[in-house]
Length: 429
Image 1 (cartoon, rainbow, N blue to C red):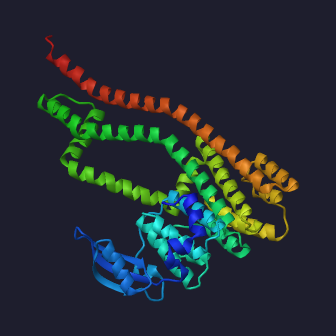
Image 2: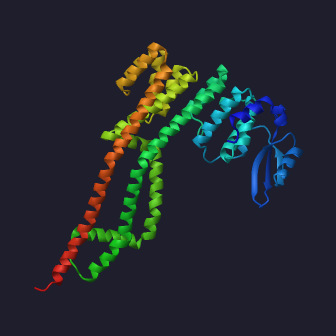
Image 3: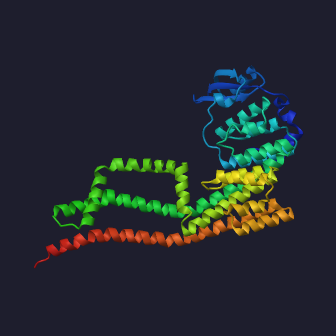
């Protein structure tokens, strides 16, 4: 984003002097043009008239090919919005909308400033569509809701509550903090697992190289000398010779296999399999539990701070859990809360939350500081995730070294045995 808090304050004091076009609602024009290098560009532009739109494009050095006003209807119906919407962009959007609205700028002007300040094409098109929807009279919540793959239930619930209560600036401020916490946690987890991932990848790459290029050459030597090979050596040589003859197919199949495995693990069945495996392993099950508790408590705290009802907050916070039965759990929470059950009792009945967390929630309910207590609990479990990851990596490093040693020893012994046999035959009686 290109605007800082000082710029926003100036704009809020003199918006008409700096941006006179914001004093009324400008139509949108869809265009196709070529730039100075002859590259074709298809996009939309804000202007008071078609003549002004053409003039603005010519000032940019574009040769206009097609220019027409965008009629009623969603922009996304005409412009396919694809690509990535980075979390850092969401954080920036929430921070700047909170600052602009707190400074007194109307919602439409705030969104238009964001459009001018972003360079990401996907973000720009989404914001342009949202701006267009607002001009048609749609709520901000429903405008963001057209992009569920970019904005989750937590985001939409807090925006909706902010619109109803008139505290959108606070809602966006809470969202920016929430996104930042989630991104920091995600980066720490990925950073911790990066080293073992690199080591395992190198092991697989070296094993593939040995089977494809090194072992076939040794196999030719043994074949030419008519040496009797052990069964295990024969098996490895046959595998390596097959991989050498079909090296192109093998190399092409590796990325295809990785792609298919990625699709599988992202599916519901794959997710359940990963959860089933990790929830049974001694160290990983603690990391998974603490990671779930961190996200759940962060989400619930942010939603309650944003003014979302306790029942809706619980239902949405359950979506942050990496748990196969989270939908059933959310329904159970909603039913119990509607019957007047306390949050502490709800968590006790769920039997998936540790006693420490339920005790903290009980204290928060009694003292009236539930949001702060949940946030403190999330911070505690985040530290537990970090400590568990450090212990896991510390334990994993020697295990990986042992696996590498066993693999190397196995390969060496498999081929040293026939070499000794060959030497024995070459020696005189």
